Amino acid sequence: MQFETRAIRVGQDPDPATGAVIVPIYATTNFERPSVEHGEGYEYSRVANPTRTAAEQCLASLENAKYCFLFASGMAAETAVLGVLRPGDHILCTRDVYGGTISLMKQFAPQRGIQVSYVDMRSPDCVREAILPHTRLMWLESPTNPLTYVHDIPTLVQIAKERGVLTVMDNTFASPYLQNPLDWGVDIVLHSVTKYLGGHSDVLGGAVVFNRDDLHEPLWDQQAIGGGVLSPFESWLLLRGMKTLALRMRQHCHNAQRIAEHLEQHPKVKRVLYPGLPSHPQHELAKRLMRGFGGMLAIYIEGGREEANRFCTSLRLFTLASSLGGVESLVGYPITMSHGSLSPDEQAERGLTENLIRLSVGIEHADDLIEDLEQALAQI
Ligand SMILES: *Cc1c(COP(=O)(O)O)cnc(C)c1O
Image 1 (cartoon, rainbow, N blue to C red):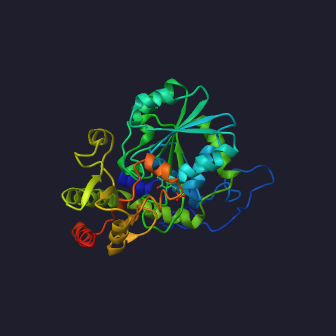
Image 2: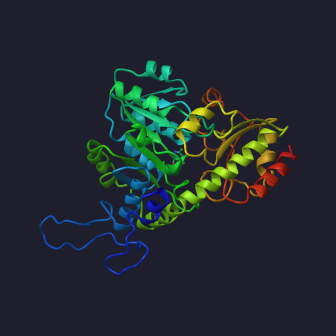
Image 3: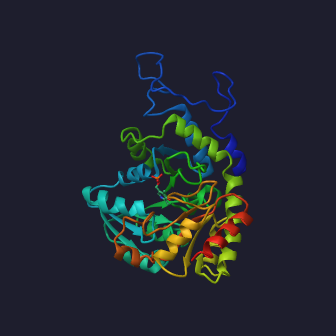
């Protein structure tokens, strides 16, 4: 079955109890047992809930995976992955990574006796050298937030496998419509379903998706015992969002490409980073790995903080707000928003400067979005 069909059908047969075409929101914490013996089926909604199960089956299918566990947020899913490590383990993390992941590495990893180091994963040779004897996990992201660097994941996975290192990849930016990292041998795919999968900026959630049977029990423990689960209502919203993921992603890609090409010619824009532009440093790699280039782009404008503020607040269709991946366009200022928790040194090291702006391009008409960007650039 093709992606579009799986998004609408998998896990979503009409309800056996009533024939309801849409998976119901099973707003119940507990389920009657047939006997006092340990029963089959549902027992308690922290452990499993039918609405959540439907969404898990659907997302597993979209990532070509056997298993999916849904969590109350992307960060809860990340914490679950951290939970499979032990004191003394080392994480090798991509330097360019979501700001919340850096906070997790900074605050939770040391508490658990886990050591973390960062490496620029654009260079597989640097990655090879950075693996330590006790490296247990390689943390990957591609395209990265906010600079849209694309990493050679199949090569990085091969390096990890040679050294017996587990790989986890945050696939939030691309969504399963544009790439399926498990097909490249990645062990665990992570999503903030808050973004493209939900797609309408109204559900907060996270997922871990994987094939390996030996990871099932440790990750199941993280969900069922850890308890940071996605609620039935949120699971239902996610199911609804995933049905249109393919349609939305095609429009996100189309609009972002047009905007990137337009801004690249603009005198007040110094540089545009979008994997779909031939000028992007990993454009060829992106073409090889991805089925489209996504809806996220980063721009360096002329000027500094003041110009950036004027640009961001002059936009009318792009809302100045955190998050990404919704149908509506958003503008973000990484140094005070997505990466605001980093020190000035950590920001500088990653190329996060005062004139850097991140756009989450929505699915409005591209002409309207371009007109809006034009008028806001005229203000700086
Ligand atoms: C938003 C985001 C997260 C965190 O997800 P939440 O749902 O906000 O907890 C993790 N990774 C990436 C790439 C994100 O954009």
